[in-house]
Structures are given as C-alpha cells and as structure tokens.
Amino acid sequence: MGIENLKTTLINPKTGATFTIKTPIIGASGTYGYVDEYEDFIDLNCLGAISTKGITLEKRPGNSGNRIFEVEGGMINRIGLENVGIQGFLMDKYPKLRQKKIDFLLNIAGSSTEDYERLAAIANEYEIKALEVNVSCPNVKQGCLEFGLNPNALFELTKKIRKNYDGFLIVKLSPNTQDIKPLATAVEQAGADCISAINTLRGLGVEVNKIGDKYIKKTVQGGLSGACIKPVALYMISQIKQVVKIPVIAMGGITKFQDLLEFMAVGADAFQIGTANFINPSICTNLAKELSEYIEKNGFKDFNEFKGALQND
Ligand SMILES: Cc1cc2nc3c(=O)[nH]c(=O)nc-3n(C[C@H](O)[C@H](O)[C@H](O)COP(=O)(O)O)c2cc1C
Image 1 (cartoon, rainbow, N blue to C red):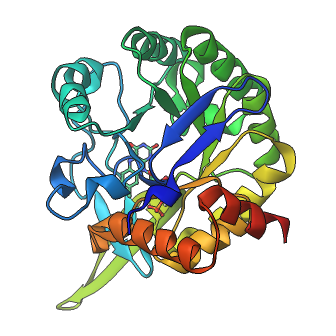
Image 2 (image 1 turned 180 degrees about the vertical axis):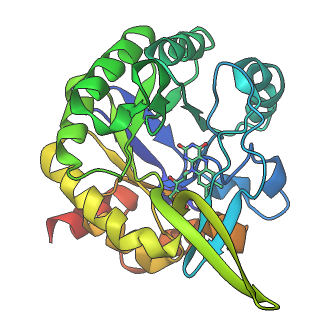
C-alpha cells in the first residue's frame, strides 16, 4: 500500500492560498538539515516537506562552546542560528532540494524588520513556494525585544513580509508568552496563510559534579524541545485554534503515532517532527506509514476525512 491517502492541502480560507504536501509529516527546522544527512534512513516519499535550518541574510557561525544539553525527555540547544546565509542556501542547498524534488519551507530569521523584508523579497524572486518565519529572534534595533512576543510588533512585521512575498506565508510562534492568542490573531490579521507552533521553550540545563572536594557546575541556557514540551505545545495549539481560521502546523514533542492523534484532536492540520529525529532518524517515515495504515484500516478515504471526523467529535 502507498501513502497516497496522506496528501493534504493547507488552505487560507480567506484568500484561497494553498500549499499542497504529499504527507502532513514535515521535518522541523534545525533538526533536519537539508535532507542529505537523513537520506539513508528515510523514504523521501513519506516526507511532506522539510523546514530548512533558519536562514539569515549573512551566514552565521553560531555559538561557540557547548551547544547541546540532554535533559530528561528532551534537550536544550543554544546553536545560535548557525547557517549558510541566504546566498549559500540559493547557491548550494536550493538546487539540491529541487533536483531531489523535495518540498520545503524556507525558514528565515532576522535581527531587524529590514532583514525579514529582504529575505522575503529574495524568496519571492526565487519563487519559493512556502516561507516559515521564525519570530523568536531579538529585534536588535529595538533593544532586544523578541518580535514574536509583542502582538503589535508581530502584526507590523508580518504585514511587511506579506507585502514582499506572494507565496504561502507561515509564521512560527514562540511559546514563551503569557498568552499566545493575541499573537495568533495578529499574524492572521496581517495576512499570514498559516501558523506553525511551537518553537522551543526557554530552559536551563544544570550539571553538578563533585571533583575531589570541589563542586563543579556546568550550565547551558537555551531552547528546550522534545517529548517533555508536548503538553505545553498541545495547550498552545488549542489556544491558537480558538482564535484563528488559518491552518496550523503543530510541533513540540511529537515522538510517536499517538501524539499525532492528540495534536489532530486539538486542531493540527499538519505536523513537524524535531528532536525525535535525533533519537530515531527514521521517525518521519515511520509516522507517515503508521498514519496511512491507520486511516485505511479505519475506513477513512484520506487524511482530511479522518481529521474531520476526529475534530468534529
Ligand atoms: C538543535 C535545534 C535547532 C533548531 N533550530 C531552529 C531554527 O533554526 N529555526 C526554527 O524556527 N526552529 C528551530 N528549532 C526548533 C524546532 O524547529 C521545533 O520548533 C522545536 O524543537 C519543537 O519541536 P520538537 O519538540 O519536535 O523538537 C530548533 C530545534 C533544535 C532542537
């Protein structure tokens, strides 16, 4: 049996803008590279798309020192947006993705509104089908305020990106907020076609070792991801779904088939898989196959019909 029953189209109900993917399973930004690293472990047909590592205008070396810290049920990372820069992406990574016919979301990040505007214009020029805007970055020009945590700033940013980009615009929300609803509303009102959520939660990893009669402390402060953040992600998705009509791509702690059902039940239209890829590089393929088989076994025509049934119950 194939996985044809997983084909799905994300639709902005207001404008009719669409993004069609072979399966609703997407490799999450920063955990999937540009597919090369995973090719030996996955059936590319099972992958709906990948979200690229966050791309900035200029290439970045990322943080030095310890960048990963394992915690119970997840990990903390402080990669610091190491990436090849937009020109590096266009010259090296983009041709390979096209050659392999892999759909992707170009995940972008910037430290000023102008950075995002320029990246959006470049994506438009290259007719990149889907853009995922990471707004969990500090706005350096406005005193390190995170774009994604202020509804007014997020509205203005999204509107400016929308003006420069005609493709399918996805804004990725941060969970590090008291109330995610005004942020979701701002993004929809500014013209985004879709929301993805959640990005990592702020966290601190601490390791204490006694060496001789001295206590040695190691700490890593960064973004928490993996199974341990799933309840937060489920809560955030359910909150977002209360206030917007545009589709939502859910992520945060998905590691097994049952998680897909839980996220669908609170309104997910597609999924991204992040940290779980580091534990099992075949996880995306396995999840797509399990979902496809489940849909067929339970007598549903396809993913959309199944989703409808689950969400209307
Ligand atoms: C090592 C690592 C690097 C990441 N880099 C990015 C990034 O560049 N841009 C982005 O939007 N999210 C990035 N993320 C966040 C993930 O895409 C995802 O939102 C988050 O990890 C939650 O999903 P998960 O629990 O399935 O990992 C990164 C996550 C990890 C673990």
